Length: 228
Image 1 (cartoon, rainbow, N blue to C red):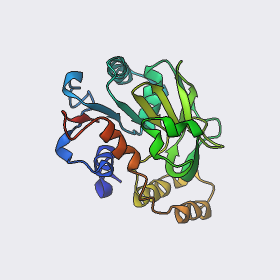
Image 2: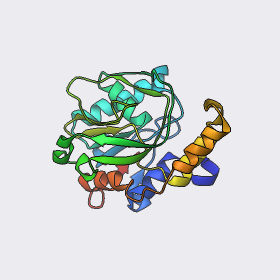
Image 3: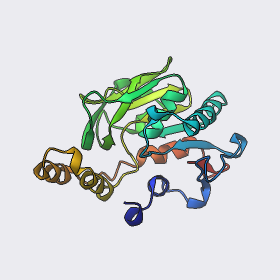
Image 4: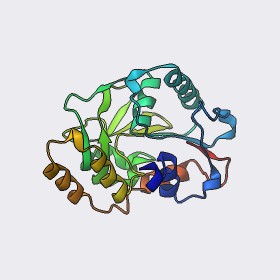
């Protein structure tokens, strides 16, 4: 997948519509985390590791996220980043009781989302790309759920005045999601189910609007680089 399409940060930068030079990419392991003063926003990408596993890196990232939220830096978490943001602020992440959510899904936004600075760009009923085995089982205090479906109750959450998270993947393209479906064939009941899921994936040209609007909120073009 990475050889063909790039990695999470590449997809987010492409979806943002912003110049790549505006972004810094760091994981705190190979690249040290920058000081918050250098950033105009923080985007926490997806990942293939599980937040519930914990460990030194999760604790490092959690402290960094809490500091960002405390300073009211705009923060957006995506999928694993959404879960990590929740955990950093006191929530609980665990295996989803119904297993894997995979494919193009429908998310219903609350009417109150129209008054939210970020989520107002999403329609009341929106299609989205999803792949996740874990979920937020307990939200941090003060969180507000703006988007959900019958499978995932916490698809779109505002955790704090300047911190948002989505369980779905606004940075995915049709081809990326179809690749993920093929990659997870062993988790599906049959080749027929895989083919059905792949065929249901349609282009969502509006999907990246959430990332684009987040960058506008963070004023990425006129301030220091956003951070992934």
